[in-house]
Length: 57
Image (cartoon, rainbow, N blue to C red; front, side):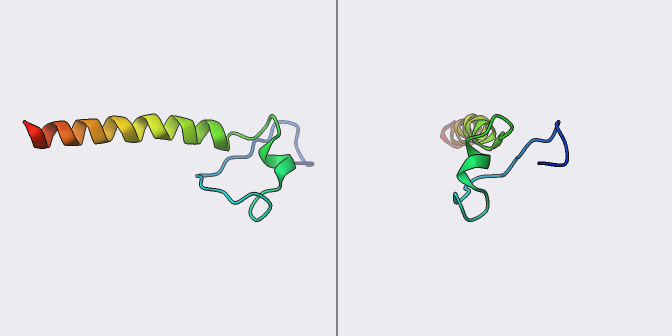
């Protein structure tokens, strides 16, 4: 991240802190990993709802 001012850190969680990324990276403003995981949760819940709805009908 030292080479650019516009960089962001992204990861498809789960991510083990201090193994793949340091705490400083995970807690920084340029880390999108937690936001992505929250968005993915809603998509997964929607898919399950749709799939289970198809089975019960």
